Image 1 (spheres, rainbow, N blue to C red):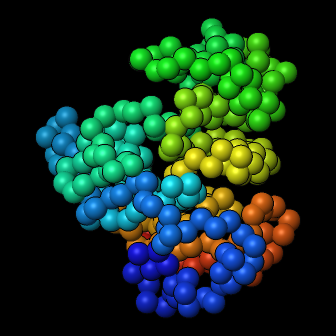
Image 2 (cartoon, helix red, strand yellow):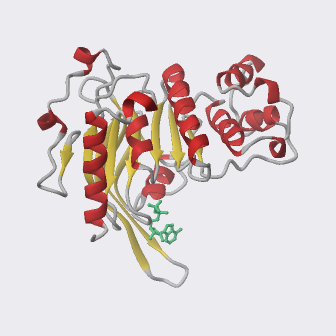
Length: 290
Ligand code: ADP
């Protein structure tokens, strides 16, 4: 399905855009064609029943796979089921129909293999940064890890000097970096990011995009990022998945063949980036009926 855009006949898929192959451009060799799928969604639908008894169809016929180590960006209009999709992968909500597997096993509940970060960092205010990051290790029967993992995470995101600070002593971006460390502390195979930089100012957000790329390049977890920012989606992703208005369906799944590590200065003027940005924007505005 990668490279397909079903919503707009005028849009060309990745194969028609004549991008050089990753081997030719020296980019990452992440390829869903070659790597085994870590997450598989087969014809997934989700219908909620509200407290007043109304039925809300959030997702319909969602069908795609994600390879081990891929960075997937998901964009779509508000209410199209993006958070629902992440919550189902995290085992926080069940599918209504279809089949969802992580590492070949149907998802039946939360797992140490999946970490999630929300828009707000939700750090516990009475705990230090280090204590917040260690928190998931105290829950459930997970094998103890050495202090060195927490220290390594703190160093990786530049928070080592703030290990013993309290959340209120950190900026919004620093708090979100601590929340990402907390999600990574059990070294999950999958990291789910639900609009994690949406509450940050534009410059901090750009900085966090660079940080996120660094974290992913050193950890190589499989990442699913839900974002309202088309530029963030394309800057960070190996693929961008575009969803229709509710009930959410995948209307476009495009590979982003830009070399890594990416930087904003070069990326935002790259013709491939500009074309993809325009294509995704077209899909979203047409889906919104504009
Ligand atoms: P998005 O993340 O794309 O904004 P959501 O996944 O949060 O969308 O929601 C998709 C749709 O499902 C929305 O119409 C929302 O109102 C509805 N919805 C989400 N959670 C619930 C729930 N627990 N009960 C009823 N409806 C819900």
